[in-house]
Image (cartoon, rainbow, N blue to C red):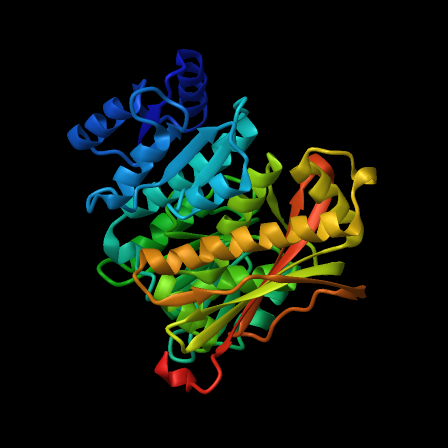
Length: 425
């Protein structure tokens, strides 16, 4: 993977280069201003740009605008480095679809998760197209094979997945190969505790046995584990139902309003997670992490709606407890929690929801899809659990902000807009 690092501060470039070489073995090109950056993009292929906003001659924002206007580089991942945190500036930057926004002084735990996401995508693109065909999904006519040594996880996985198509489970690599030989399938989930045949060898054997035929291998692994090199896709290992449901959507053939939205702008779960990490990370100057929490209670809500093509309505809710809202608002406003009024807290939650909706709205604009974005409204209520939307109609994800020990939830629901038929979407 080739990374272009553009920052007028030599010490910052040195730190970034050291982090990249230590953790991902990237090829690196560096430059000190925006003019050099654009020249480098014209002269060589780049997979990721790490770009400082405040630079002489040609600033990072102007460089970013040029990248997004370019037919060649308009989809290029960009990570921004800056000390800027004003909401109006953040909102403008989010419209350009940046991958990440890292505040200075630079810290590894803020930068490297964004780099790792690009590295995984780069590795997937480098595989043969036939091996990474995302059209291969579980449905009644297309069965799947799960190979995993944990009996509890096999039961959890199959009990959900078999609602969408046949799933055969094997408890070891050897058993999985034997089952695959008896009844080959083109969708295989490879988990952990496989016995004598480890996951890398298992993937190689499966491909040999399926030579010349479509095959999609999905690696199931814990968040901090290294994914299998021979797999085409990754599925985070979670036994929290709504987290598992959200991540599994990419491997199931579903139909419903949310799937129609995903067909227009890409996987909605991934977009929601990325947007939450970007917006909350920028405004709170903190790492934001998706959390495996089965339930979450809230008293604060900021909710708005995006209408797409006047046919689909996407409701976006940001919810948090009053205590979490106070801590998050204090971090956002750079003040002490005790000094905040209820109005201050609600205003902060509303601003975060507004930026989050703006990022999702911008995604439709990038695809030249007509959409309208409303202004989120806030309310408080007695504590209640944040529910999980009906399958194919919505998603719920919970996130944590370690810097303030805060938690929040985002719920997305897709429905037909009033007076329109769902089929029209």
